[in-house]
Length: 133
Picture (cartoon, rainbow, N blue to C red):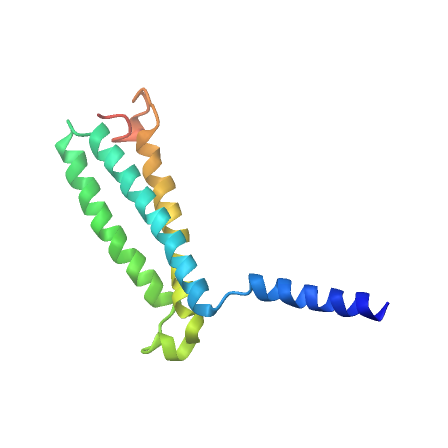
């Protein structure tokens, strides 16, 4: 019985060791996850550009909106983590937290831009540029 318990104990400990991640690895994993979503944003943005390519007023407005959104995104990060030296203030977890927040903000932007990819008959006066290819 003692051998079984010892084996079970070491098995559990070894399994925990296999799945443990360093903070550096978690930071890296969160960055990879964020970059995947950021790349998706680029794809969606390009689809909107292509779909509305014959509407230069819309394209100019979209580009201006994207520049402002990037400024807003960066300001949101600064607001969330306002310390002068965030790595010192928030510790080694700071890069992971930023990446998670960036990923969430970017997913919201993707969903927002996807509205311009949905088919619309343009019959609603309040839909503005939606469907104005």
